[in-house]
Length: 344
Ligand SMILES: Nc1ncnc2c1ncn2[C@@H]1O[C@H](COP(=O)(O)OP(=O)(O)OP(=O)(O)O)[C@@H](O)[C@H]1O
Ligand SMILES: [Mg+2]
Image (tube, rainbow, N blue to C red):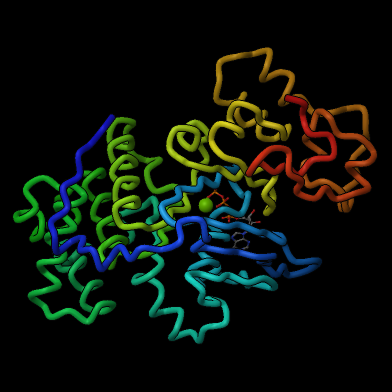
């Protein structure tokens, strides 16, 4: 579905899209680990030694089952790991700035203005008592130092850009007066109003019906391209990632198991977990049977230091319990963390 996006000049001026080296990552995460302490025993490692680069105008999907560590990663990039989690190692360089090296105030300034996040529960994010136009304008005023009038104009422009019908009237609406799809657009408008260079969408469209979801994704993509931003798109639905993302990372127990461009990853998936996820979404019983059947040939002891997927993997062998696999390149831009990656 193609949705035309009209953005007025004040919502998108040339100065908001400075020309940059399109091959140089704007987002560069290196060796990031995030842990949650436990009352007794070793902490839970929710993100482990993770590397990720995202280039300008690129949409990178992050797919994995519940508990994979997607939200922990996303929130850590905003300097807000879910409490009581904390970042134990790693660097996050955004637009040549070492984000984890900034003071709390420094990160607060970046968040919302340069990096923003869209989440799945818009009604929890919005103030129920304040008109939505005012909520959008406040973000612009705080982060961009605009006057009330300028901020209102900017809020109005962004409401038009996210295709809210009758934006003049909607500026004055309270959140409960909007449909779910419209409330989601308001949250996207808030995330985009400062023209951030990096947006993280955490499962933001999964609660919407399919046509609204398709429209909003299309809109997000067009805005990302026009504003020269980058998007990390988190979803549990590998099918949505296949349609929408330029590259996709498959995450399991805090690690990226496979990452690649759309064609390479989805036409020739190489990790058994990726294939398992794909088969779960297709109606091929034989495929599902092969790739979701547990391997009963080996005994997998708890706390082994090998592959995190070993206890679920139909191909696991003793090597998988003894050695942690590294990410290795299997094609251009396509990497897999598996001792016995699936042949093409
Ligand atoms: N507040 C918390 N306290 C303790 N442990 C947590 C907390 N939040 C997350 N974790 C741990 O971190 C792991 C990753 O959680 P996270 O919420 O990042 O997963 P997710 O991939 O976003 O899952 P979902 O798809 O359900 O949103 C969990 O399995 C859990 O062990
Ligand atoms: Mg989550």
